Length: 213
Length: 213
Image 1 (cartoon, rainbow over the protein chains, first blue to last red):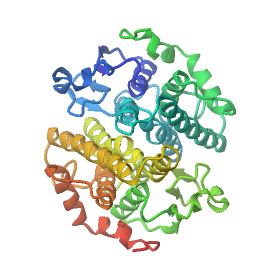
Image 2: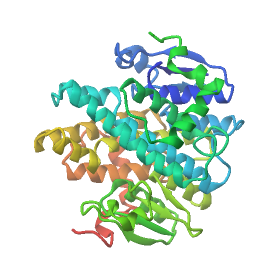
Image 3: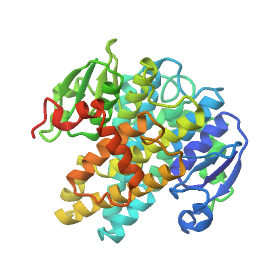
């Protein structure tokens, strides 16, 4: 398999974690978002949407959208599972993942921040406040959701799931923008537990071949 | 089952479509977002996140996040299926759904529009331009994705899927803000095909008990 991705992209990071948790080898193909490589012809031939990541399967199918890719990996390589086996538990894990992927991260990606600055003429500090507002308020919702679910080592239970694949990149992202993580004990305990695992360490931006330090 | 939802909420509309496609009866519990009922104690006792929709199962479990709810319905009531059976095809359908749920809709929901107006002091016209920009550019990506996939009556194949559950509410939303839908033939053909079905008609905002006309 080939993963077209960018070291600092949260959505890319989610998929790298899933690949590492499952012990699946893959070719790392960097697409430099800040240099605009996702908008150039070379990547257009790979991805019609121009978004990263794209997973190219061994059969040559090209799949987009990080959560769809992770579900695909979980269906085609079931061990270790990234979703529980019971339907309501699966729903809880997917909902946690979507709290991050649909409520937090879309407001903070590069093209949205660019629109704020270039089209709406938002100042640097107001842009950073926007960023921190959505991450902080979103993580507060996440914490409340964790609190109503059974406690465990990770976001849900005692093995990492799709929810952890989303949480960890979001925390990394928030750290770059100096988000306040206080008062989020369950969330940060899950994050710390994840970072104690080799899979999360190997997948992190600083260990990517295109990392710029 | 009980669905806590709001007639005009896109995420609520997605779940109503899925319930109708599967022919599942449910109690409709309105939560008036514009009046702020989602932030009041009565709903806080139902939903820790305060987001709509929430599905309360017959077993009393409360599930959030529309895509997670629809996957739950598809797992517990498999007929008619809302996802194909083959793994790469499932990934394509999920990716289409997520193009809307993760790339378009989060930028246009009520709390984000409020933040633009109240915190960033964005004028009405610039807010509407923001809205139309993300819907239009997102639907252009959606159209390109449809074009690379096999043609069919709906977004993917000849039966409605999770992708159609997301597309139709997004088009409704865009219509309210007068988004330009020209040059999106595959997308709009799928929309029209959906609207020819009873399930989509029954689920639409104008047929909801809390519809205000």
